[in-house]
Length: 294
Image 1: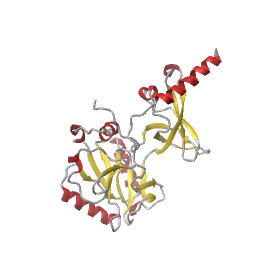
Image 2: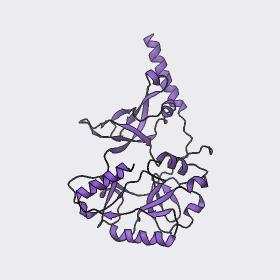
Image 3: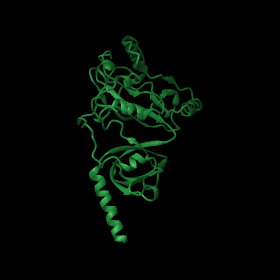
Image 4: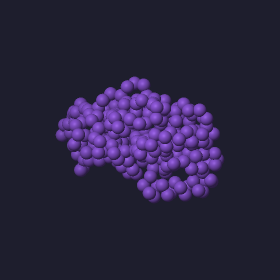
């Protein structure tokens, strides 16, 4: 009987992997070069930084002609949304509001955009790719571009100077209590750079990272017949499981093998594995929905 149960579980996993067929459009191989943040550390001199809220949106870069996701795929925005954008590169976040990521993601990934949904979306810019000068001067350039464009949904992310660490922590607390993600710190004297760099820091009470789904474990008890956990592989090859944060819908039809997801965790164990890992979402720039409008 035990052998039969193992066989059924094994067959279930095989069928699940075969059945997890995504209706996604492939993104181009070349992704735009972007600045990526390092993690804030308490010993830095915060007075050297501009501070802004960390928005839980979808990263997008405007190249002067086309709006693209972080992975390189074209954002299927309505023509009117980008029609009057400046003819210079911009980097920012598509955003609807705090705790509205699922609504935003469904809107900006739909192949056939819905105007009524896109009317809620804003493009919040926080960088000016390849522009000359330090970040302080680029803030002024961005402000001028936004003012000249006069597009209501094209907005500059509010930047304020950090006074000291105590004030910084107070601001983080205010943002978190309002449902925000955390803060971003950008060195005032930094030239424009790409790649992961400490000129840009993220400050939030948890960490997040990405890993690839390489398998599933069968559910037990009330999750019998569904997915119990996702088996994840980190970039260094280490594997761990993520079960926390999975909705019943995801347990019934989990993301397919090979999908890159973002997860949250508190810290790493001595073996380099995430502690208290929790599923957050499919990587924000990995896919574009091809499903018909609901």
